Structures are given as structure tokens and as C-alpha cells.
Image (cartoon, rainbow, N blue to C red):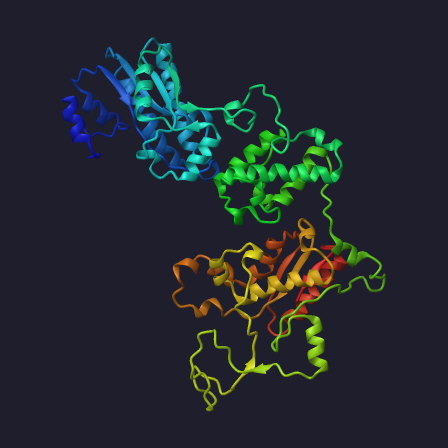
Length: 518
């Protein structure tokens, strides 16, 4: 049923028999009475998944198509005088490729089968093909980013002409296992898997770091480590310059997926000589934090982030009988109040924060009804509103515009006032990454998402995290890289007070040395 099958059969003057080649009985019946001159086993199948996501069923499906069928062809034609026995394998079975655990294993097995036949004097070639230029079949779903990733590993596409010439050459070669691929080396690039096990001249930073880093001043250590991280991050993302990689931007937000994370980990491992965990970019979610981790590993140092907030809490402003002090504040209130100074001025001047209804919220024009109790209406003519509730600098916090639309405005304001509270205390929020700073949030209203009957497709996937109360405190911790407790409290009208109380308890218990609470 494949496109072009009928034309191929006519050109070869051949018959086509449809049979499950992994079914011994069916294959045996198809071969009964047939004199076989040679075999080309060109089965192709993908079920891409990292090793941790593989199931026995997924692995069995790939192995049946690629390996079981080849083994049965070997067994059922041993009494035939074959001129050739060619197995179409893949360079993935030789070099490996992130996310193709089952495919790599199956193709490596084909090479083993070819070597076994060869050892028994039977013809056999397993050809581990590299990428071809034709964008069909198994490579049909490959993106430009996928091809760029292979190119960085030194694997480039073969033309159809070169592929056919290599096939002819393989049939004339008395070697059971062959690689037919266009492979290149970039001079000085030690990150290519093609250089594994070879002696090369170490490249200079920012491409490589080693234990000699410890001899340099601490500031230079961090700079070199950050240059290394940004250089390799830019490479795997396909950027022309590491300057495009912000040290404080989470890897997830700048385009990393699980495959890129693995490639990135592998490149850094080869550049540093360190054995790095597969969860590297999740454990150290931004370039600055990761650079500090690599610096520690290479110098034997401890992670001691600069946290002025700790000094503010434990310094001379705290006393033995007053161990908890407030060092910064921020707020949003009706009446245009955007800071503690605004609030004090408003109280002194006896201001009025009650205004008419906002006009940017899709509320009906007839919202007001003088009759109390009218469904869908209110008998009040105004209220206390944050008129700028829709204003939010999503880019500043590394959040996509679609996700920002799905976020409860309470989450957006919480990010803003948390940042401003730290600045008010004289603390650069970026210096708190990796610290034990905690976040305690009082939150009692959860009606933002439920009022959206049919969410647009663009934001539907973000509504759950955008409207869940428990995410509110965690989002602040995630964006700022804080590693202390993150707790959302809902005790109705006392939520903020309870959050403040819990923050004080956590400070006194030593669970954190700085806390954002409100």
C-alpha cells in the first residue's frame, strides 16, 4: 500500500507479498517454495521516548519490527545460498541520540546479528545509516531544530546519490557492521560525540573549564563558569551569540525542552569533565545558578550566595528580644495606592478610595440596579477597585503573554509587590537565588478561572496553574529562585494575618532566614 509500490514492482518485475515479518508462521508460509537470492531488511519504526519513559510494551513494539523480523529472516533462510543479507540499521545505534532509547537498542542489535552471521561464514552487512536529505519516512517529523542538533553533533545529511553509492560499496565490503553517514569534526570542538575517547588539545574558555579554575579569583571563577554555561546554552538553542542568554532567565522560559536539556548536560559534562545529573537544568533552573553549581564542583567550594536579606534579618536591627523585624514593604490598594508611602499619605490626607466601576472588565452596562437582591446586579454605584489590575510586565518576569492572560490578577500583583518589597528593603532580588527565603501568602478568592466558560485554546493549558491558589506562593519562589518554604494560606478574612504569623514562626524556627509574607 506504500506510495510508489506498484511502480517499483513493475520496474523490478517483482511480486509484492504483504506479511507480518515478525510472525514466524506467516513469514514461513510466505517463503515456502521460494528460492531467495538475497535479503534487504529495511524495516523502519520509531517510538521516541527517553529511557525513563519507556514501557515494556513500547520497547517490544520497536524490537519486534526491527529485530525479531530480522532474526526470523536469518533463521528461515539458513538453508538458502544467499548472495547478500543486508540489514538497514541507524547511526543512532552507534552514537546514540537523546530520546531514542528503544530505537538505539534495536539498531545496535542488528549489528550484533550481522556479526553473528559473519562469524558462521554467512553473508551479512548491517549498515548504520546516517541522516538522508530526503525528508520522508522516519525523518518526516524532524524540525529544523532537530537537524541543527544533529549537525552540532557532527552528523550531516547524505544526498540520495551518495546514499546509493554507499549501499553499492557496502555490498562489496567483507565487513559485517558498517556506518554510512556524513560525519564532520569542528576543529577544537570537544563537545562532539565523535571525539569521545580521542586525545585532543583542550580549547580555551569559554568552551572548556577544569579543576585549574580554583587558582583564579572567585569573581573570575564565576564569570568563566557563566560564560561556559551561556555559550553552550546559546549553541543548543541555535543562537548566534551567548549575549542572548540572560543569567537570571529560567532555562524552561528560553526554550529548553527535555531533549535540549540532555544535550546541554552532555556538552557541559564534556567541557568540564564532570559527571552531571540528567536533571541538571531542573535542579539549577537558570544560567546564573547553574554556573555557581559548576564553579563549586570544579573548585571544591560551597554554595554561599550573596544574600543581603540575611544580613537585614540577623544584623544589628534585630535584637535578642525581637528576633523578627520587618525590613521592607510593598502594596496595592484602591485609590491609586502603590507603596507604603502612598498608604500613609492617603491616611493622613483622609483620602477616598471608592470610585465608579472599571470599564475594562466586560461587565454589563446595567450592572447597577437600585433594587437590592437583583440577580446579576448590584445596588452599589461604586467600590474599591485596582484600576490597573490588567497592567502586567510579563516579559520582566519571564512569563509568556498567553500564560499571563490565564493568570489570576492576584498572582500577577503578588509577583510585583514581592519584587518591590525586596527593593524597598534595599535587596537586589537576583541575589536571593538559591537562598532559603520563604514565601507565605494569604489568598482567599479563587473565582478568576471559574468565570471563563470556554477558555480560548491559546490559554486553556495555563488556566490550572494560573488560577490555583497553591501555585501563587510557588510562582514567586520559582521566578525568583527562592528555596525556602512556599505556602499559600486560606483562612478567609484572616488569611493575610495567618500568613504573617506563619512567616514569623518559620523565621524563629530557623526554617528560613528571610520571608516574604502578606
